[in-house]
Image (tube, one colour):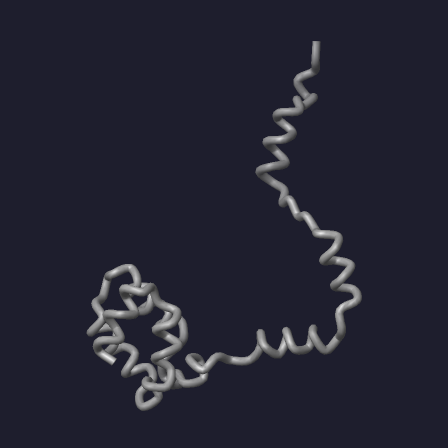
Amino acid sequence: MSDKLIFSEKQLREFTATYSEDIRVNPFEFITGLFSSKEKKAEKAAAAAAPSKVTSALKSTISLAALEEKTASFVKGSIDAKAFYKVLSVAFGDKLSVVLPDILANLPAAKAAALKKLG
């Protein structure tokens, strides 16, 4: 007879799957990471910290979160291309023609085509 305080193997697996995180490290990537040059690490950090053209062209009165929300609404179909183009015009002003290719590249093909007709 087993005691009720002793967990079965199944119960332990369920518990650890729910409350723990399985982190696996590739030993080859770890070793090559130790020997990679400091310059490559600095380049990666600089690339991650550099603002994109879109965020740097955004007017200071418009928040990036608001623009992301409107973009998500456009992708989901809540607003049409004409309304989204108006949002972009307000957000970027004269710089819209500079950033529009980057925005179109990051949208689904159908949405990008609809927006490109207006721009």
